[in-house]
Amino acid sequence: MGFVTDLRGVKEAEMRLGIAASVFAHSYEAVLILDAERLIVDANPAFERMMGESRTEVLRRHVQTLYAAAPHLDFPGVWHAVQAQGYWQGELLGRSPQGAVPQRVSIAAVLGDEGYPHHYIVVISDITQIKAHEQELEHIALYDSLTGLPNRRLLADRLVLAIAHAQRHRELLAVCYLDLDGFKRVNDQHGHAAGDQLLVEVGRRIQSHLRAEGTLARLGGDEMVLLIGGLQSPDDCAPLLERVLQAVHQPVPLPRGQGFVSASIGLSIYPLDGDTPDLLLRQADHAMYEAKQNGKNHCRRFAGAEPMVQAPLHGPSR
Image 1 (tube, rainbow, N blue to C red):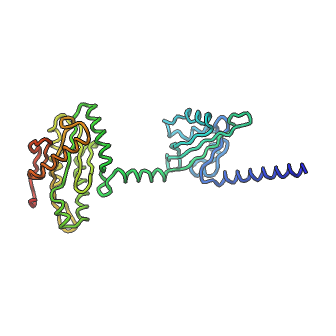
Image 2 (cartoon, rainbow, N blue to C red; image 1 turned 90 degrees about the vertical axis):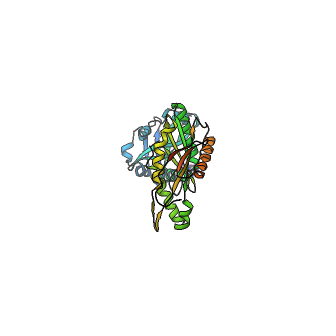
Image 3 (tube, rainbow, N blue to C red; image 1 turned 60 degrees about the vertical axis):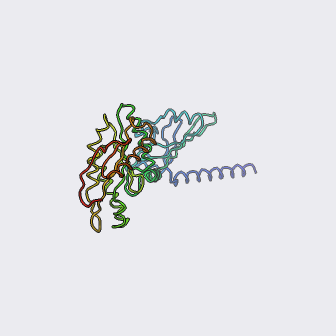
């Protein structure tokens, strides 16, 4: 009976080994087996498909060579975690036939009878699609769906950074609140689809005049905010704002004719008019309403200053 029991145990062990081998061979995730020196001793077919290297090409190579594209990776820290906890999981930049790809990597230590790692199991998942989806969601959260401009949330972040930059470099920053004059009439005469088309074109025109570090954001409706940094005096932004006013004032081709709008711009200057994002935006908004009430199609600085820029009027009066 003892012989039969032993034979049954051997068969059960063989069956478990067969199942493990089948899982290794058919797993969707790439799997590596490392020896105690972290050299690759086996790789499954999924690894070959994912990484673009055959099993024979990677045998006896150190696993770290697979992640040369991740120069800032703390490999000593990874292995310290594996030694201390028996396990590590994180995201690395790996290689594939298509180039560098983001991967989720899990490393588990297999302990021998003496209690020290005898082998390591490395499981690698390609998370390219997950990352692409995350980036898409991030873009939706931070950018206006119509114009592609930064939205209110991203503007808040950009404004904080712009203030910090201006403070660090002892520069001035202009916060410009822009509202389109005559936009409602375009919507009423041409329809909301045409109004959307006009907003996209106006945003494109304004952006074409900005330097790389400038920010144009859409808050909603026909309201936008423009950040202009690197100023030494408040008047330094006047030439750019003049170009913006003139660009906005040019007719916009629409499916049923042309749309005519102009811009009223209010601005506040950091740190002369305020030193916090909320205060600067409120003051610029207030100045914009003053610009609207005093003729439109011009720029007015906060605190009731005279119009800084007056663009020549063309086309139908507003």
